[in-house]
Amino acid sequence: MNRLFDLRAVIGGLFTLYGVIVTLVGLFDDPAEIDKAQGVRINLWMGLAMLALGLLMLLWLRLNPPKPLEAGEEKED
Image (cartoon, rainbow, N blue to C red):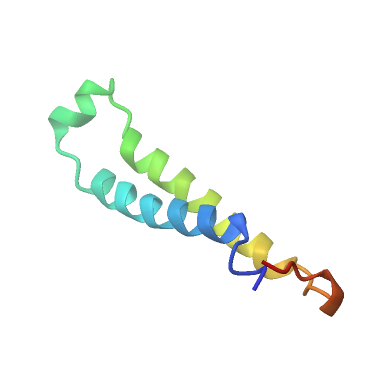
C-alpha cells in the first residue's frame, strides 16, 4: 500500500510522459520555431532532459523500493 503513494512513481511517470511529448514536438519543429529560440532546438533538448529525469526517478524507485509496513505500524482510521 505504501508503494502506491510513493512520489517517485508519480514524478517519474509524469516527467517521462511529458518528456516523450515534448521530445516528439521538438523533433518536428519547423524552422520558424527554431529561429525564435536563436537556432537552439529547445523543445528537443528539454524533452530529452525531462525524459532522462523521469526515467531516473523510476529507476530509483525500482532499485530502492519502499519497505513494507509492519503489522503494528498500520494506521487505523
